[in-house]
Length: 501
Image (cartoon, rainbow, N blue to C red; front, side, top):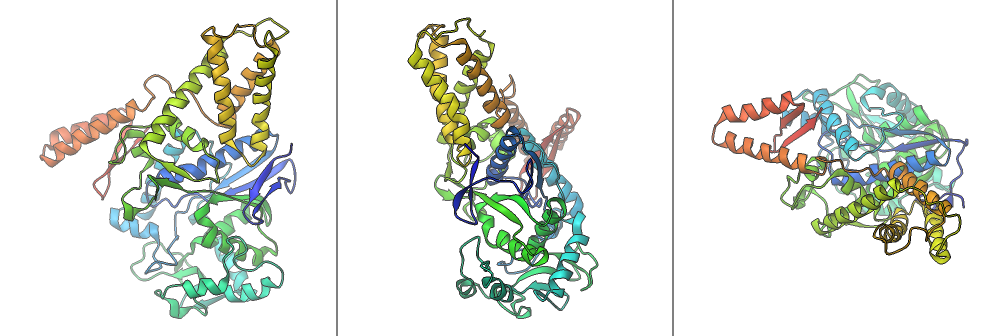
């Protein structure tokens, strides 16, 4: 059975056929490193990590590019076109690149805890200003972008008029009609600079107080968010590549704008398959700062958030994500994570026992019906993964197998019930899928969230000492942890982040 994936562009499952097999190019939008990674970041990066692992398992040579947005990413629908990095750097009284390094380190630390493989290439926006400027110059030369007062905008209406005739209108990915977009667009700052309300910024003129700025043919400024990914994807994966991934919230406007820019510059749709994971809600409500329910990954691991009843091990988070199909809804709650914690423990204990159990010598199964059932359950692993990465169904099969394994372990089923070849296949396939494809690993002693809980306790004691102006105790906790390789960082919002060397 060939691998099929759901293509957001065509809104249907399609057989995955690489442009230049066995090579596969995959681009996934990375984080804006102006703050610490949160629960919402975990889902896309775990999802595409599993896809990356499964493609390699299928023999593909994958170039996985995941960028870091360390400049730009101003909000087109905010009151001001303000660079998130620059704004946060002022708030935290740090140099912009110092801020970027701090949150990049925290991001890498969290991804490591979740056991995500590093991408093949991790380009940064600031490292590709030249490529972005060159792409903008080409857009202007082709008549699809224009400069006003040192800023450059993409002409969405011209693109839509020209490319609708080619069957590729603006909105082809998200399904949004341009006229409806224009009607729903709010009156924003700098709208008077644009030819059309729907136009988006490729380059913004930097005001005098703006910290991050680069020279360009249009004066000093900084890049727009959308152009960054188009430039980096083109540089490392070519004018056309296989997979573009990200969260569902990026379909519009980010990926829609990428398609428009790249299509004009490269005369072809940038990616063949557009894959998007669904969002995570918290107790049925969208995660957002206004709801005060944004949970940082360090808080998840330590239990240091009001919505959390306990610390949760990174493998519990990873398992929780894989229990649902990546395009389905996923609602976070303490109850759901506690259930995942128990289920993961049951799976890993059975897996560990099976891995140490010697393969029996019987060539013929004593229980042929059970033997056939086990073979069927194991054989469906790849079938389910080939059906748009259905990790949820694979795990459901695994737990049916766990019941069989535990029954053998507890001697409710005789050891010769399964044929030796079936046991051998079961061992190999469980190891392959649990460890290599799903990226789940055993929680070692002392690595079950207790360490994070102890650190949170020390952080709380230090906070209490600071509030009592007991700076001797406060400094001692900080310095002693530093000698052990634990770096504490006091945040402007009163929180404390930490990294472990």
